[in-house]
Image 1 (cartoon, helix red, strand yellow):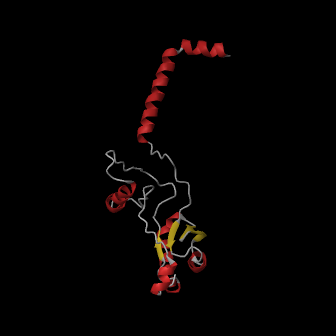
Image 2 (spheres, helix red, strand yellow):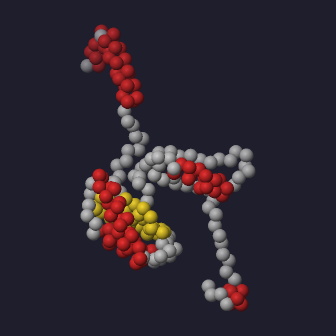
Image 3 (cartoon, rainbow, N blue to C red):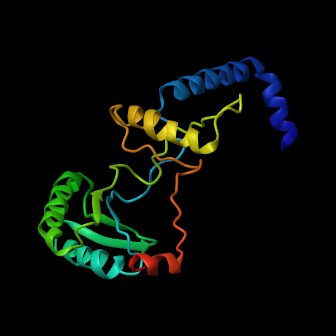
Length: 201
């Protein structure tokens, strides 16, 4: 069997070489014209609502649960999923059809506005980026080769200058910062001094 195949290829080698060249040329054509996606987005179309509030223990009871209950009654919604942790909550609303995204976004925002007076006043509730979970298209790093800036300064440069400029570009839903040192303020409590000044903890 194998010897017959080899003999046939050798007998018609010019035709085989021509077919091979045609396949190579066709492959180049397909690579240049096909719309390739390194990570195809197979996730459900979703609308994200982000919540930030200072109380990690109460965020689920005071904000997440009331919002989820109100979203469940909206038409055109297939599912509502939520997670709460460390003072942050994320509510994922899955529409029944992808072409309903804009309409459901308006309904969600209207429902948030209606419930806003019953939720904690200092809670930050905002729609998340209009992008899929696999929409990470570009990654960059700020590197100081001279060693004159530390990680907190590089993060401040990114947050203050690069990120706002990139977010103004059409089609960019979100620029996420990863790494660097975030500025923090640490309070050290000295109870005797608090007692002298009459300030409670």
